[in-house]
Length: 384
Image 1 (cartoon, rainbow, N blue to C red):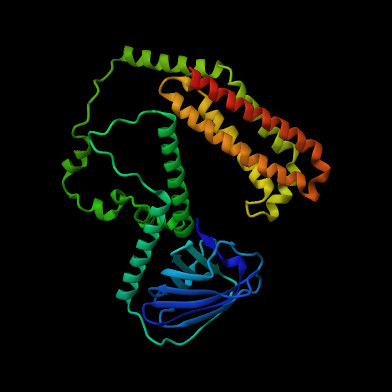
Image 2: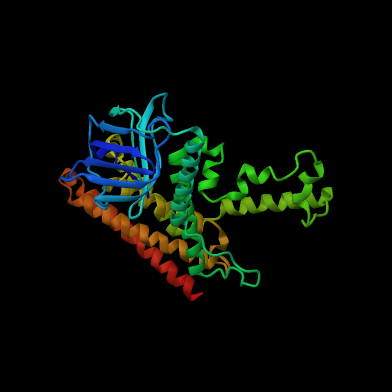
């Protein structure tokens, strides 16, 4: 995922006085030596040909330990006029795509910024070309995250519904979600309107350019999507009434069906967790970046409850086609349970939680029971 250096910045300098090369140095909290930057490409027109120096008045956190001390790669968007979605302020925005760390960026509205005179000036056409190059770099980075499989040939076998096939499908879905969140984080809601998100996600079929290939003045083209589609016969009133009744019966049957015991156990566990540490959750949320041990314990526990409700919430969760899907979901729940245990162990070792040890021991026991139940259900489904 992208690395945001903003909280760790002490000061920095970015130099684009040489065409097609951005060099710089960044001094970060927790590092004695500056991070060296050497990138291909240019900044946006407002600072292309300039040297930018900046200082962060309130550095607050160490940066990612995995950040390499020498950053080589391709520029992303670099400008002093970046619009901040949460207000009317403009931010210094420095982004690049590192060969080893992927997307890295800095966004500061409170930085003290100094910009030199232009050594060379970029025209509008050059800026548009650079922005397009930056979009392409973002697209390639997201493609590495998504890892789309090769398209299947017509004679390939259909989806085999096995646990492994479902697991591969779920992993791809996760990667697509992660990539889409990265795109939305960068471009905001505006990117949903102007094709940038569609382009960087590789959704070329959604681009305006593709749609413009279709004539606008021929109404018959608007019906082209229907060609080859099977047209269902109209149902008379009796058949519709029967369908409505069948659907109502199905809903009533589902509502009266008892939830699976494992689903109930996980649901009750999360309810107790959220109610028993309500005050601590509020205090944690005020100062958390989402990665504390408490955040991870709650998040993984909720993942288990939510996914079990989805997987076990229908009568046919163990049916022949659904078995592979259910097994894949249960495997994921085991992974979340292990992560929840790891976070809970951190909480139990933290001095500030020493008066909650009895409660945490109860949580530990309940979590063990849920994990055992998941393992038992996996064995049962495999035996059927």
